[in-house]
Image (cartoon, rainbow over the protein chains, first blue to last red):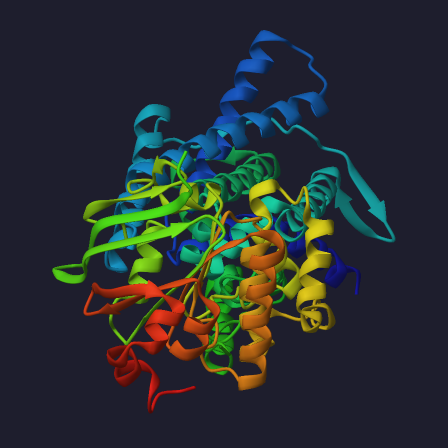
Length: 300
Length: 241
């Protein structure tokens, strides 16, 4: 039983990270109907920005408090990733809007390759380790929960709350939802559609950057290929939860995190990805629009 | 300053290589209700959308309140206070009635929202009952009211209505036309409307234009056109009254 709960905690931690990345996929898909395959690399890039800031800060000011260090890392990662995603949308995706559907998709794959190669060339191809930032571990009823896990979960929950508030309760969120539902009508009401789409890319990138920083802190290492597997997993999470649905992205992320850690705990770890993707396939057979996705047909 | 609010001069609009509007001239003065009648595919809705810059006119000029708006992007035209209730209503289906109205008031960042939404609810009490319901679940008539209400929330100087009577029951059509009349008389709202229901439109309007194949072929006061034998033969007799 304790073992099971332990795995639940691990799974939820991993799921939080996937969920944060998945939101970026699902929002961009919702608003312009494309899969931003470069999103995983934006996540990786965020991690690298955090790493560089960490190295700089620790070499200049020794003995900085960890909280401050983490906050600066997160801020730097968010800023860098947002700037990149904003630029990518502007130069690579926007000119192709209104083109045939596959064009931006292929461009996104190209951007993904370009980004990971850019990091490989500028930062080197080797694994980049950092010393553990927070190492306290608490024992609660025989289950060990590390401070890292607590930070990740608290950060995820608070970000999701803020995010939910923005999307559902603010003028910006309304503009985003309106643009998603009928871009032309939104423009007729005075909404700057291009700007709204840019903001969506920035928001998605910010969450991915937080996830990237958390990933770096959790595993203590990053490498230029790190955008790929978590990116694909988060994309899977978005599809599993129902692409276009924000709660779906979080639910999907949590489910994939749980499946992975529970499978690794009770069966062989080598097949954890097989388990994840099998469950995706099974869900899609019975519910093609994902768990919380809405069917394509709409009442008019 | 002249009292012409909207002036469309020699506007041509194309969809790809197909010419939808071939040199249209239309004027709307402040405080007028002007209607545009014509058969299906005559280019009425295209003119409405061209005024809003989506699609943009290929040639010609559109002047609003003395300013050339021909090349402005759609959202900036909307910010000049031209509001449209477009063809097909285009309600945001997954937003509530209330949120749809909030979207209408985006220009002023909801500054006058509370005050204005009460006016809309007085005008269309039905919307008040349905305010928490999603736009996509409304009936056609309710969607039409919402679409007009949403346009009014922008505090427009010019209201463009594209077929407000399409697919509605006669009683609701009357309700909507009465509402337009009240808004015009009491608040001096300028309205430019497209209608297939020519009889009702001509009766309501101060002036009207007839459009055939992307060109304006006739214009005059509502009464004149109602009496015109050609208009009667083409759009009134045997049509929907």
